[in-house]
Image (cartoon, rainbow, N blue to C red; front, side, top):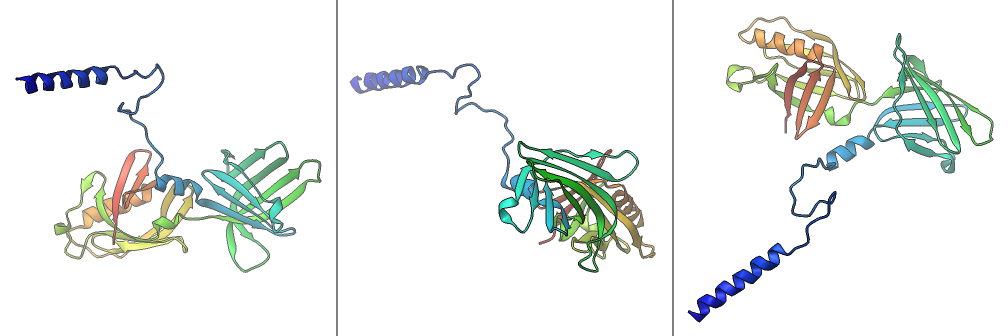
Length: 266
């Protein structure tokens, strides 16, 4: 009986100390509280650092890289390089022209990115955008910037993707005798090819940051049982304006919602 009473006493003391813990003050969250906070993942952090636009110029040589986090300006003299937090550009209403304005205590940088073929004067490569700007450092003379640039398609898209869902309808592999519809994306060449479920298909990619469009889509013209699904898929690709990559899946969207979901092929 004594052992039993001792056990009760110990339990009482444990309960007492457990309830005597100081409560968190207002506005402070205790370690044991369950709160919903979206923590930045390593994948998100990496994505924010990826340069999605690069421009180069000559006389003198310079470079600009734009990511979701920052705008970087580089020259051969490394001590003259700098990076500033990303600023949202102003877009012209009647053309694909973006205007960036960056200002710190010692530096002022303004430049425009205009869609249109551009030659850098150093190679035969034709860039898709021209870049013009003005850089001023302190009391120094303004530097005129003239060059060319391109959007860099997210390298993570470079893969083979198997269709899992289109326009809200799950894909059953058993319905496709020749294999599940798929895409192979070639980021360096800004193009894609694949199998639409009945016919082969291919086309070009247009990319600007989160904007992704599948353009100039062509297919062979065979008829088969899955032709309806194929037409739905091609239409979904043509209407896509945005993408997301998550858990080895590629999500394609437009303002109406999710158009298609693909799974990365191992």
